[in-house]
Amino acid sequence: MTRNIRLFLADDHPIVLAGLRELVRGEPDMEVLGEATAGWAALKGIRELQPDVAVIDISMPELNGILIARRIAKEAPSVRILVLTFHEDRAYVHQALQAGVRGYVLKRTAADTLLHAIRAVYVGGLYVDPSVAGRLFEGKEGRAGKSLENRQTISLTDREAEVLKMAALGFTNKEIAGRLGVGIKSVETYKARGSDKLGLKSRAEIVRFASAEGWLMDL
Image (tube, rainbow, N blue to C red; front, side):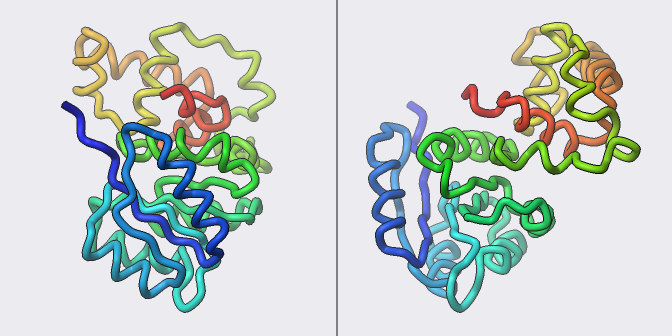
């Protein structure tokens, strides 16, 4: 029997925290271990309870969500941090990812995306809200490969798409091979071929593309 996804929720607005609690309460595969309304309490609670996923508001008093993520990445690396925020600027997204955050969800879309995001980061993936994911590529056509507009005209085979999606979710080549019933060399070929078609040079770019395409929401 699969155990529940154990969560810690942190937001300095009691109404938002109550909303998060209600959203999660209706999910049979999730449970809330603890809550906090300030930064230091959140850090202490996450350290002690060791949840699977910690959902944290970026704008927390005392210690903001980015600083909490940096501390947790060092002190409790098994905990996956998902930040909840009003900020849509890509600078915030980059800062969060550099701090070790595994999920970036906008508060305005949380009712529709948060549960998908929690499940995505729980299985080892990285989730960026589709509303901001596309902006990560703005001005990067020369550095990050083909633009999203150009990528939409590129056709991947079903197998190439499957492999890239699973890679974005954090599965290793060996795990992908086992799930698809193919050899590791075949997985490497599908990944390389798909990445080459899309002009993707790293796993981070694969994750961003997958999030922008909505692949990480089909969990």
